[in-house]
Image 1 (cartoon, helix red, strand yellow):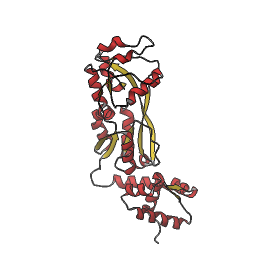
Image 2 (cartoon, one colour):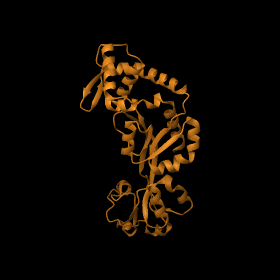
Image 3 (cartoon, one colour):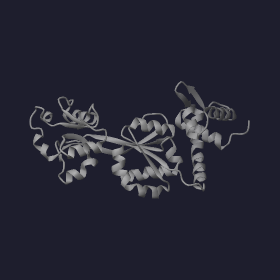
Image 4 (cartoon, one colour):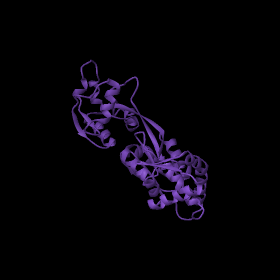
Length: 294
């Protein structure tokens, strides 16, 4: 066979980062047999296995890890050099995340982001699990995730701690808790989902109990819609503080509870393993997200 070249090393690094021949093939735009053949050719040239095959994918051998440490930075650098000298228009960076957070925090600064990264940005809204699957498959470049990713082939770092508050229109202020008895049962609830995931978490964190006995008056699968219904006096809800901050300042909403420690949820920024080091634009947009999401 011919001596291994850059394509063999690029394929090897991608397989090492994803832990999967199938996912590496999708990311590289190759067939799985081509990826498998390149790995076998590289192993033959090295004279030792680079991966152990398992039922769920591949795991690097000690020699494989050693080669990845030696080769990854150089492959990434060459890819960056090639990308920066291509004359074709920059392809869009695919950014996924919760509709509410991206719409409120990112969209108003989108022009700044595009200017910094030198490429258009395409937003995809959705729930974390679906977006992370798209990230692994190569359909997205970076994801803002409300849950911590654990899948192999994805790297994640904390981005933002969102605080949750129990709010309602001023008309409900007199129903704030005063006794051990459940005063919340008198106030209808506007929920994000039928099983009250955000409200349930708040109740368990602050009151150490389930939100039993509450009456759900509406279910709206968009937190901005929940907020607008609460603003209109439909009832109470638990919402991220960033989404209602201005309304609280103007007195359009009031806090119905002020716990000593507000419930927090850590939001993460996720990329494919090694992508931040390899792709300058992904690195730039991650840095911009850290600047504007606070």
